[in-house]
Image 1 (cartoon, helix red, strand yellow):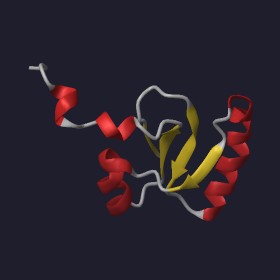
Image 2 (cartoon, helix red, strand yellow; image 1 turned 90 degrees about the vertical axis):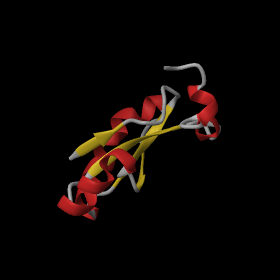
Image 3 (spheres, rainbow, N blue to C red; image 1 turned 120 degrees about the horizontal axis):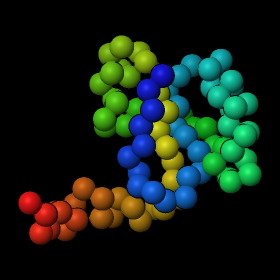
Image 4 (cartoon, rainbow, N blue to C red; image 1 turned 180 degrees about the horizontal axis):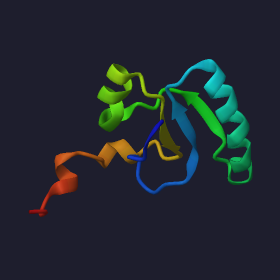
Length: 86
């Protein structure tokens, strides 16, 4: 399995997962350990831009952190974010 965390350091709510149904059910059982902090969601998806090619071509299951901030991508990877840097 591959793991990606590319959504900042905002409150986690769970993970996107690209694996099969049996693995997803096992992962959901493990994720119950994160219920206390509200990070136990396991939803389809999770390849992300960094892992995407390996996930697709080698069929490697992956997880990607999900966070609770719909505004994150309004500034993430935009020209304004990188102004004045190098």
